[in-house]
Image 1 (cartoon, rainbow, N blue to C red):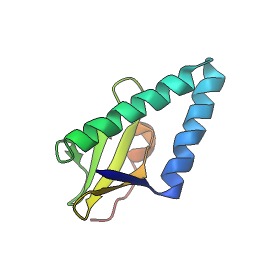
Image 2 (spheres, rainbow, N blue to C red):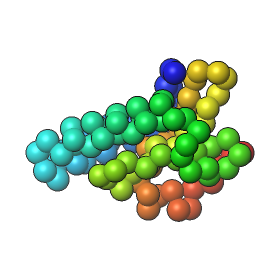
Image 3 (cartoon, rainbow, N blue to C red):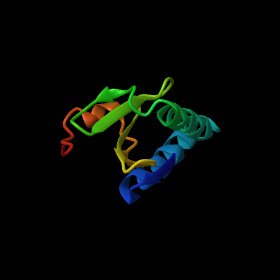
Image 4 (cartoon, rainbow, N blue to C red):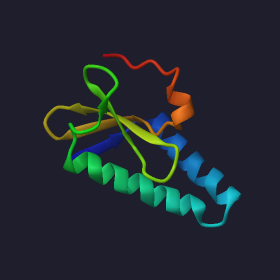
Length: 96
């Protein structure tokens, strides 16, 4: 399965890595590894995670207050809309 990140999601991901690295040396890289493990879970079980709307799902990371919000498009392509901090997704609207 091919994963495509939208530009805002990719920027948010790299900003979060930088943020965590300023909080504690190496923590940002641990965060990146956890997001990669989350993406691997999405690839393995794309329809297993919580639905936010008809086509949109969220898979939460295990260690950080983060979730990967995505939609499955076409047969093998997943579009990631956000790697949003959980506190930010509470008021986020996702189109169906």
